[in-house]
Image (cartoon, rainbow, N blue to C red; front, side, top):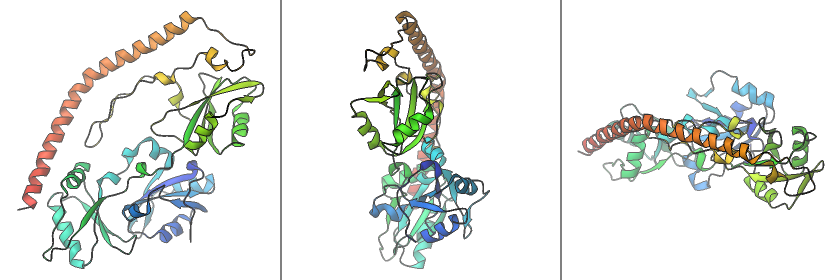
Length: 367
């Protein structure tokens, strides 16, 4: 059964991992038990990398089928536990995945090669897990290490086992979904009136492109966030000279997101910057200021038609509000910097010790 490779509605899509030893037909047959499947894809992953892909995006046709699949307590095929995440949650936090601990080694020609490869890497990480991947005519061993740092070091140093007959193996890090994800786009729409509801906006923009979500910002009812399934759609709409809806001139701005979301969130409201989080083996970048999230002055929103009514707020009150918000950000950063400096030093010491242990294991394995 040939399935489409394009995701139509990310809100009905799930990420399914640990499928490298499962053929696609078996995966589709299993998922079809919960409802009708609309598509099964690997994003925009090129053909030459598909052999090293340990996941699929599966899209259901209805919300009922989607919920039935998610509400099932434990998914598995042939005793293999499937890693299931919603597409929306995945985009918000790729740290949920263990994909960056996985390594493909091969091709495997002889049965004895399996033991050779696994024993070699167990001298580095005794806790590793492995299985055979048969997604193409060539067979590879998929190894999952207990730490991301093991994989990074192996890739950097090209640590590859050797056989008595000098058979050549190659190593490939597992394809990561964030590198081949289907990117959506968001628009911030200014200039709304009381007559314009979310339903009216949805109908208006759906005539131009497929809309994923549409919601009016609670703190600024004259502003709405609209999300499309294609980033190019946003660029095309921005090139439109003038948009009018129920007598109002709409001003469009592109929402700059590192990771897009398929559901309304509080990102559109001003909030205090969050403290950085510690990942398994590294320190994430510090939070960025949310300057672009401050509401635009209403005078800017309505400059397309000078005949429209302009709500001019006192400049003094506006500047005082911005000054207070920036002062709050500055104080937060100062406080968090003093707290996080100690944590960063501890994290660096931990990484150095882990590197030392790994290097010692590598040196031992080469003896």
